Length: 179
Image 1: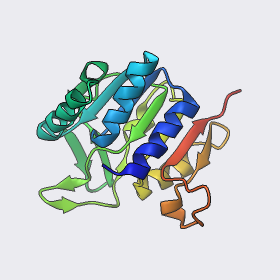
Image 2 (image 1 turned 120 degrees about the vertical axis):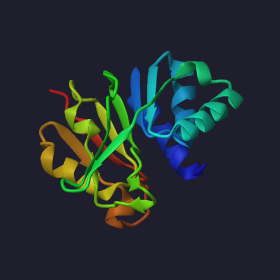
Image 3 (image 1 turned 45 degrees about the vertical axis):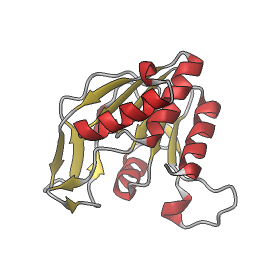
């Protein structure tokens, strides 16, 4: 578990107060989401391409007593090497106001494609209130260029922009502009 990442995620949840959460890529963050869902009566869905990884995550949730507060899905991933995109195949329709993009894994047969853009969030309607991206520079850059600043306010991760660590921001965050 990455302590600072989890603390940052918890702070974001407390600030944004989502009623529905979608996590693309499960792991230690799933525990934070499930605990939040349990305490705030929020709907929470997590999707992963690895059945084994999701089973390990669910074991961790059981140990923390929050496994009943998540709806888990295993979905295949598709990486289009030509278009340099990654997405989940047959992603269940989920209307979430808070989305974490940390999947799918950008790996095929042991080779990682760090230039692939995770595209699942681009086809979500209606647009989530908050989109949080865990590193994934190509996804952040494409979102920043394609999502209008009149639709979303963007805060880039300090990890990506190498800014001073004062008020360090672990995640890149897109907050929908309320009209």
